[in-house]
Image 1 (cartoon, helix red, strand yellow):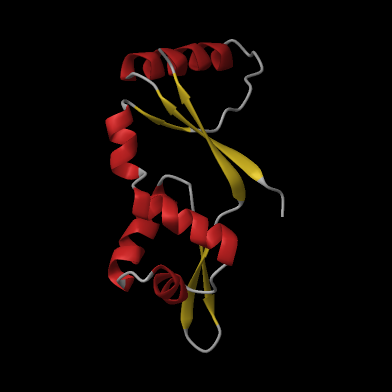
Image 2 (spheres, helix red, strand yellow; image 1 turned 45 degrees about the vertical axis):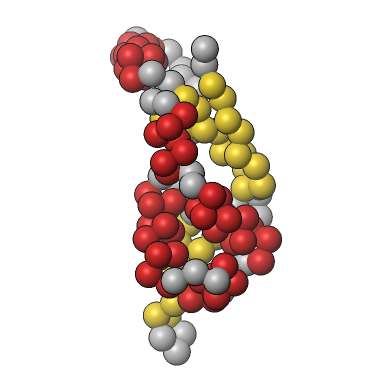
Length: 124
């Protein structure tokens, strides 16, 4: 498995819109545009409301222990299954977790984290 890096940044909405407009102009004019992947928040408070200590613990547990199911993950963490499920859905929506559905004896969702590091960038 190829390990990638996830970039997380704090960027004002105005700056994000300007970057989008610049990229759009480049694409329209036929210029080659470098693909950038990342997750951006408008403030540190917004980021902290998403990347809580519990959610970071989920990422770490998945990366280190490779649970075979969400149930197994919730037991590892000593947390309620419903709460872990909700956190996983949010983490999957923003691209920090991949959820794989398998069906052997019963439907099972296996969480995956395929990166080793999250890099935080804050523009001043």
